[in-house]
Image 1: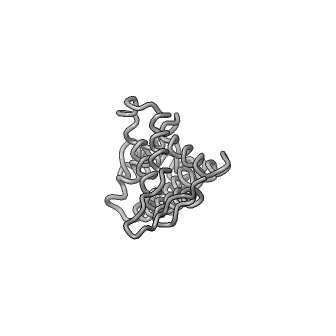
Image 2: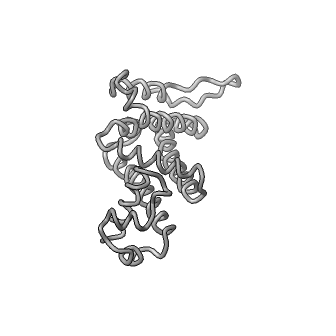
Image 3: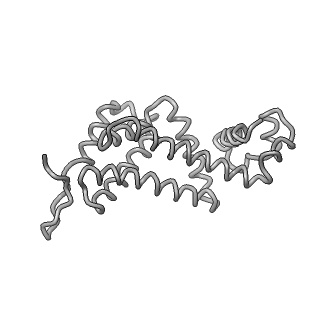
Length: 196
């Protein structure tokens, strides 16, 4: 039995029930082991919960960023790839984990801090995509927030409403909206990308 086995079992219980369901006896029953195995890897329950958050951060943020970075030439193709993620086969399971952790964070500081860190990492990655496309810092920040909201919202809604808009149409429209030139401000300043 590895630490990863305990973490995966805890994540399963978090999704199936909630964080209160992550109890040592339930984990042992699920894994078919004794408590001694738990204490080989963790001193206390909170250590398991911290490991669970670290796994979530790595799997659903750092690994995704690495994968997207390696997958294509960069820029807007990275954005297109990120927007498509909620409609991939494993995405519903990942969305359930994300939702469960965010629900847990409504009541407890430890996951709230982890979520804040993850959101900052994700927003920075989106922001860099827009900066690389030529938007200034302020405009890139706004668009990164909208892109992140679109991706997170689609991860929750596409299962019930997604059939109303085909995946490619959804992604094309979001891309069109997010990459349109910025509006000129009253003082004449603009933050649009350079025109080819």
